[in-house]
Amino acid sequence: MALRTTAQGKEAGRAPLPLTSRRDTWWIRPLLTVIVLGSFVLYATWRGLENQFFEAGPYLSPFYSPLLPIDLSIGGWKVSPAIYIIAFPLLFRLTCYYYRLAYYRSFFWDPPACAVQELAQRKRYTGEREFPFILQNLHRFAFYLAVVFIFILGYDAIRAFFFDGRFGIGLGSLIFIVNVVLLILYTFSCHSFRHLIGGRINCYSCSNASKTRYGIWKRISLLNARHGLFAWCSLFSVALTDLYVRLVASGAVRDVRFF
Ligand code: FES
Image 1 (spheres, rainbow, N blue to C red):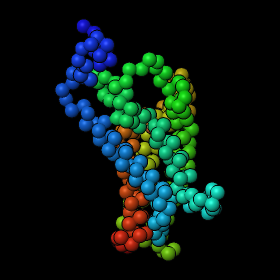
Image 2 (tube, rainbow, N blue to C red):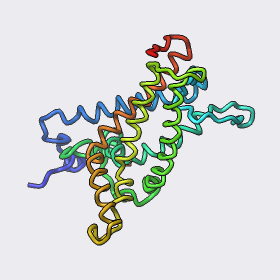
Image 3 (cartoon, rainbow, N blue to C red):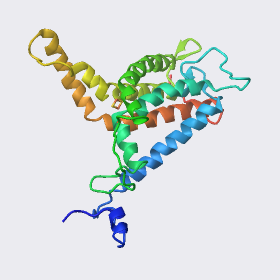
Image 4 (cartoon, rainbow, N blue to C red):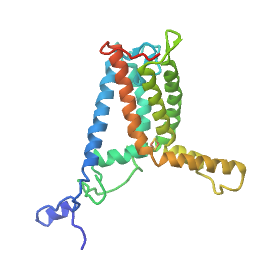
């Protein structure tokens, strides 16, 4: 028997049917996604607008890196440089295939899980072929920008080991290193990068170059299988790195120095 939708149930003058007959806790995942992703967006927006406490000794918040040495005011209104900087990593994450899955399910409820009905019955489904979702196709270009940021944040992580020109190790130095490693794992496990390396080729064994590409593609595929994990871990690490810088810069905590 065909599954009747809620809308159909209403049309037929009957009580609406439940969204799903699943009895497991399928709703936990979308709920957690809303809480975690929503919290991150709120935190990043607040920090981006705050425009202070982003530098403490050799530590520079990832939301404010690179430091922009120009006045970015618009019409006398002082604009936080983070607004310009965050836009690029944000584009990368918003268009990421993994995050798309996560927020289409949790925020748009479209559908929220397998075998769970969508809330709204659409008349026409255009997928990502029309505005605004066609912009998701910018992801491959956002990947190139993300690679630039890996170099910038990698430089910041090295700088985090030099206190007044002398080598040292603080808790912040270690946090910066962990952050950049997680960002590298997230960026280079990207589906677009995997396609860049192993896609658009018909024969992997026909030349030494294609064999090499195949070898790299296999390794990237191993990373790619954990892309979702890296997406969450790097999201946490960016927020925690910024939070640590803010706490030290505002004097709320003192940086722990090991060396
Ligand atoms: Fe997630 Fe490219 S698919 S960053």
